[in-house]
Length: 306
Length: 166
Image 1 (cartoon, one colour):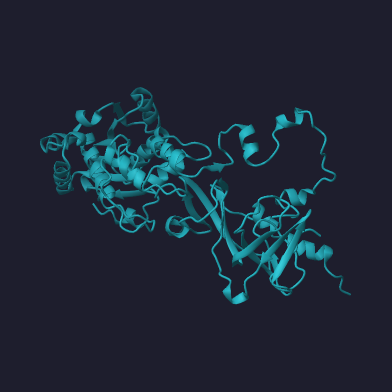
Image 2 (image 1 turned 180 degrees about the vertical axis):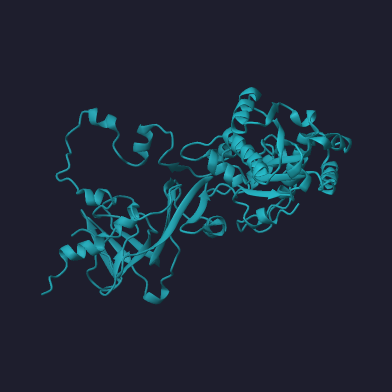
């Protein structure tokens, strides 16, 4: 697994893929989808697909791929090695969603939630397999949300493919376990070798699991909090753990699309709120001339003091 | 005319918050407002430092230093027609613009804030700039952006108020 395309720019989303085995372009195939790193406040979320001919399902089973979460890191690396050795009939592809992509998507003006992002990523990977000529007949998906609706959505987008969406699909279908192993191995490697684009000197890499309730992760988040910038791009700013820490320990930042009380905004900006016009002194200090549109459109004001 | 700040009589200046016009040439310029006077202290030309300036589409409740180069400049990417970066998890798109021709941008610092608005104030030019990078929240930079349009004013002002040539 060559991670260098992602490591070149770890602020964006990146696709990595194996060679497509020739047999997958000829025979009916099954494909599994799973993700790794959905919950952590640190590092990327990785989506993985793995596919092989339906006729090779049993062979895959005998290689004892199991749900990646029940395996140790070494076991996962080992199994990934096995999958790689089976590259004559097993193919895989990954979409690495950088923490920066996750932050900026979820905090976008028109919010793009993690579920929508996940679905779109999964759909993109299935489409990639189809576009590469893989003869897809069966797709198995692990899900966290409501399975039935997701299954309908996928069946609608990919007519002619038998889609099965199940919670814990990674422990039910070996091809999903295989996808889960690819995703988890990539996520672990990326987190371990994270290259900070920020100039922070030697960064402590004892992040713990990256889950918000891990004391090591918490300690790391406290240590690497900058009062102005908040965090390096390794951190998911959209996680409430990060938000809460910034709210209490960093300076406040206000955006024009903040959902904030209008009265408060006005106060902060030294403006008058609508309400003030109903006060006793209303109308007392009219402006004696109106500024031309040319200036207001450019926010130009004549300056009489600093 | 209200505010008067300049570097020399050949170069006009654009203040960091709004445009101001040239007048005299001494080293200490005055701007009067009501009773108090604002003095602008300009170090000699050679001692003026050029500083990169960024205009962000948000309000940061902080006045002071920040690790701009470590966090911000280091993660800025030059894409095809724009620069991209993120700040506090929000995507910014921006571009570099130059100060209007003949103008220089000033970063002013007030070291001793007066206790009341009756007292005179002194601000110092801490650095100068002839270009700056402005950032939009998610929107690609374009010619309709407020700061780009604002830069039209000096030329227009010149046309309206400048000496008439035969």
